[in-house]
Image (cartoon, rainbow over all chains, first blue to last red; front, side):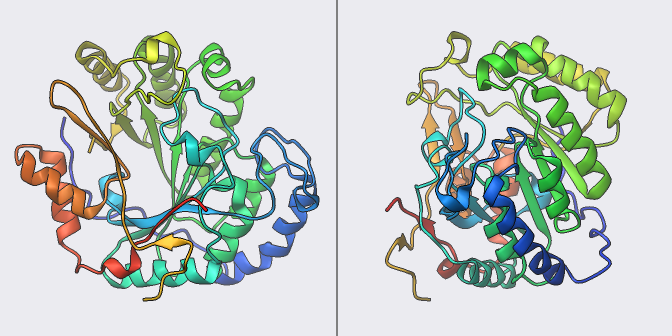
Length: 295
Length: 69
């Protein structure tokens, strides 16, 4: 498959005011939201400021398990300064980074001031974007906004997400990120329930993808899972061709089985060649705008 | 640059090398992209990533992989 280096991404998000100002103005609202947290679609409503924990197990403090320059993501974003916050609201059975992603107490309490200094220095050395990821960054939207409020307005910011945010979280991040890189993991309710324990996955993820498409440049990422081409990728591809026909799609065959989790039987191997070829065929049949190949 | 006591000035990436010799990578750093490109110069995707990595001046001082407390 052709894997072009794209020379430019979409025009920056048009903002009515400086991004720093917008982010700073939303910090008090976001802190207040933690008192009855409904930032993700689980809508736990727990008081994270008061020590309660919801499904993500995160408190009010945010920890960073990685902050470094990386070149493993979609080519048009690279190099990127990737800031990974620990803690996630999902428990996908195959999560490669589950040790840090599921444990919000892993990593260092890096202050927004420090992160923004490092990111700004990285940009000065030729890094193209600053990427916010996790775990799931939505869980730590307060720390994210505190960091964004200190970054240069012109810095291209990437929001790398599981697309399981609530409407409240989306409103708090509207206009701040130039590009969303959103996972679309499961193409039917049964697989979402069995592999991640999510009951309303399709409704939530589609709502997030449509919103992101309206508010920023969007790359939808799907990691092919062994045994899930027909049940997950195929319906997903058809939905994308109907509802987001021009959106950039990053189809990855890079899944590998981590030995540190008890995996469902079909996930004990990497994707087979015939599955990969079938997945590309489906993408071509659906005329998807594929942008990526694997690192 | 001073790094705080709770973080280490190293970069890390996760690798899986399978029996047939295929290498899977997560959190690909510039240095690792350049190394993998040397191992297999015919890998077009890795070559592009190594070129992107090599196009910016080296400045390891901004790159920090944090460690668990």
